[in-house]
Image (cartoon, rainbow, N blue to C red; front, side, top):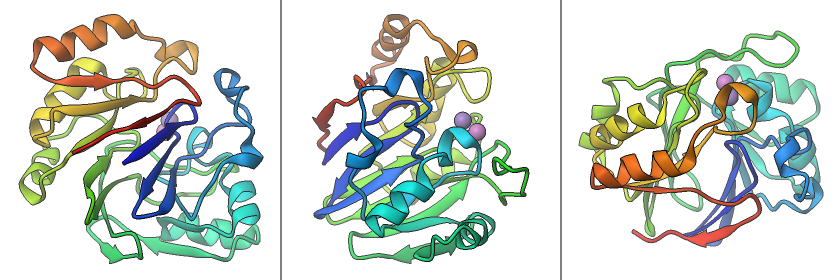
Amino acid sequence: MNITYFGHSCFGVEVNGKHLLFDPFISQNELAKSIDVNSVKADYILISHGHEDHILDAEKIAKRTGAQVICTFEIHSWLNNKGVENTHPMNIGGKWGFDFGFVKCVAASHSSSLPDGTYGGNPMGFIIESSKGNFYYAGDTALTYDMKLIGDYRSIDFAFLPIGDNFTMSADNAIIAAEFVKCNKIIGMHYDTFGYIKINKEEAIRKFENSGKELILFGIGETKSVEN
Ligand code: NI
Ligand code: MN
């Protein structure tokens, strides 16, 4: 699958010809100045939780592209009130079939208020199941024992995990999470954007290597093909 990084936790993933965009936070990301938010493609926008560093550009991109936004019921209502009409509300445990494949919502241990203080529901992660492979996008979360359920549920080809520590799990905890979800190919996210989450990337990559796993880090704007 072709994956493009737009900075922080925002990735575009092409699945069966559809562009899935996760957690768009671009226009106020100092590190993502090279990205023109008006050029980002989306057929679907998946929002893990309501924090501004995950939802900031969702309204703008959804209105321009007409992409369907997949999110909690609370975020769906909030977006509807802003005039974003093409939304699909879900909640943890639920699964739904779309034209690219299935989305299953899983638990994330974090918080979720929207930028104006509105309650955003529970934070979520997503398992994407498709004829081209399966992957896990964790959103913002701590390491939790619940992640073992994901490894038992489906074979995961690659997983997006936060590695920045302070607000989420660290690289060390992401190695354990990778073991829980039974996946050796990890794409790191939620690091370096702000002072609290600046990390030593070389050290993180080395730690994964020493555990027999691969930590893939993207340059902002970079596209890579990640295979099963
Ligand atoms: Ni957050
Ligand atoms: Mn965040």
